[in-house]
Image (cartoon, rainbow over all chains, first blue to last red; front, side, top):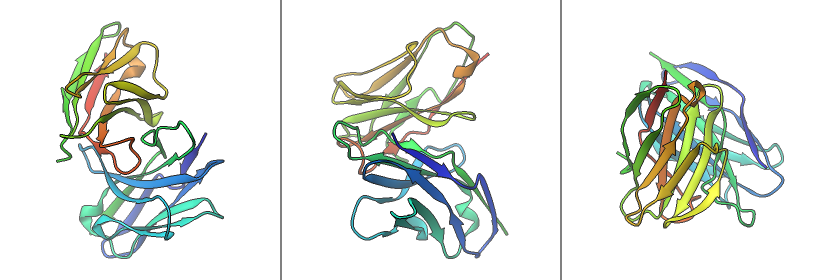
Length: 117
Length: 113
C-alpha cells in the first residue's frame, strides 16, 4: 500500500513571493504522482503529473514539481504566486502494480495556500 | 467547468435514512470514481466503475453501494446514515483506467443530522 504525507497543513505567503508545498510518499513499487488544486466550492483540478521521464514536471498556472526518488518526494513550487493561487493543494499517488486501478488515488491531507496582498 | 455533473449539490437528511447521489461523467468518459472528503479522513477513494463494471473498491462501507448504468451515469447509494457519514462526496471521470487525468465534479455536500 502507498501513503502520502503533506508536511504543511497551511502555508501563508505574500503575493509575488516564491512558494514550495512539500509532499512525501511511501510505496514499495513504482509510482505515479499528481498535484491537484481545489478552489473554494469547487472540485479538484489537475495541476500536473509525473508518470515517467524527466523528473521536473511543469503544470498549469506556472506551477512545477520535481520527483526525487531517493528522497521519495514530489514538492510543488511556483516562483511567484498570485492572489488567485489561494486554494487547497493535494498531492496524490497511484501505482502501476498489476491489477491496481490507476484511478485509485491515495491523497495527502492537503495544504491550504493563502496568498496575502 | 470539468464537464462532470453531480446532483444534488446539497443534501440534508436524518440518521437512519437512505439517500442517492447522482453523477454524470464527461461525454466519452467510461470510468466513474467516487471519493469521500471529510475533515477527519481527508479524501478517500470509495469505488470505481468502468463501462458498467465494478473495477476497484476502496474504503467503502457495506452500507454504501454504487452502480453505473448503460448510459454511463452513476449513482452512489448511502443507507442507514450515521452522523459520521456527513461529508463532501465527489464523483470523477476519466476516459480509460484513470491515471492519465481525472475530472472531478463539484461534489455533493451531505449533512446527516
